[in-house]
Length: 119
Image (tube, rainbow, N blue to C red):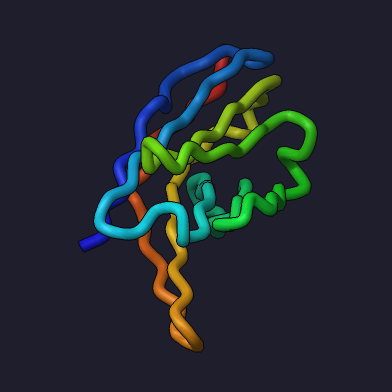
């Protein structure tokens, strides 16, 4: 059974930094795609960043140049380094794992970690 456990959220002042971690279990981590999504109150969930099993990376437009996604396959963990945080980055951040076997795609989600950017 796949489990994703996020950590690292919290309260930070504008301009500050946080690093989120997502520890995965129950799958062959090196073969799955990992990502971060976020959802602010009253808004739809949006892509923050994804990293494929081969290391290809995509970022949402609003975080390009400020956030960095990375993965450590030896630790079954994906990270999100967030710099130059702004109040509009306030949201619940969710870790996502995608497995693709043939034509079948399965998505798994963590429970979320809250990031609040405020002075």
